[in-house]
Every structure is written in structure tokens, then in C-alpha cells.
Length: 238
Image (cartoon, rainbow, N blue to C red; front, side, top):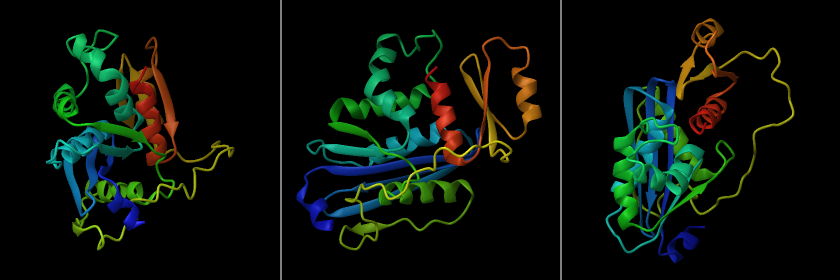
């Protein structure tokens, strides 16, 4: 598979972000691979959100690209960031960085910095399923999650041949199990959305206090970090 990577002129990037709570401690992880060199990047923040970490992972990956002549393929499991790049940024800019709901775009500064790179680089954002065995995605998830938890992470920088992660293999080896009821299962967190503001709660009591009696409020129980991420991204698009 290394030979497949070396045959392409494209730069390949994998990104992921994580937060323990939302807001809470967070981390991001990125892999930038040219046909010769692989660079792992990562960082952490004490008080952040999952979406901010996803955006930072993309931004720092793009900042690591020096050439403007090569196509960049970015693989990520964040539909929020993918849709932002592929669908929303143009209209946000045209509307003075306001959403259709006439509210300021969340993380506007990060989006503006990303858009600067999009204007000069040929960037393709490709959505892949998270936690499905795709090696590059699993590695950036590991980096982001460990850094969010305050763990030490050794980041690789060296030859493509010496890298132990098969970035060329995008095959899904396993998927989230479907069809099983979550009834009675312990919640990982609770996600609420009030007037476009998404928050994470540790208990139902906190959630109920925020949404009770509030018109248009939405809330949902999550059962895992990836489930929480999916709910957040769904609410961000409302």
C-alpha cells in the first residue's frame, strides 16, 4: 500500500477532534502525508468544544502544507466541518459571516483562516465513517483522545516507508452495530440545543433544567463519544 501512496501527487491529510464534555478538555490530531514524508500533529486545550477541535485539526493540517501545486485530499469523520467547507462557507462570507438564522457563525476566526487556505489550495474534503477501522482515522482519533485526556503522545515525523499506519487503505473493517435498543443503557452524556446553542450535560437533571419550558429546545441522550459527536453535528446544522 505504501507504493500506492508514492504513486500519487496528492497530499493526504487525516483529521479528528475530541472533547471530554462539550465544552470540556479537548484535543485534536492530524496526519499530513506527502509521497515521501509523514507528519503527525496534535494539540490540546483545557476548555473547548468538539467542533473547535475538529476545525483546529483541519487548519493545522493545511498550515503544514507548503506547496500550492499539489492537490490535497482531507479525510475526516466530521460532517459539520465537511459541510462547512463544501456548502456553507461561501454563503457565510456573502452574508458577512452570518448564518441563515441571522446569528454569527460559531468559530468565525477559525473558518476565516481555513477559507484563506481554500482560496489558494486545491482541497477536497472526503467524509469517512468514524470508528470503522480505517487506519488513518483510527490514528488521529487516538491522538486527539489521548491529548484531550492529558496523556503523552509520541508524534511521528519521518519517511512514508517507516510509518506504521496504512494510510492508503480506506476499507471499512467494522461499523457501528445497528438495530439494538438503547433502552435502559447508561448515558454517556446528554446533548441539548437551545436557539442554536449546543451544550453537553452530564446528567438528565442538568438537561431538563435547561430545556424545560423553552420553546423549540431539542435534547438527546448519547451513548458514546462518537454518538455524542453525531448528535452535536446534527444540531449544529439546524
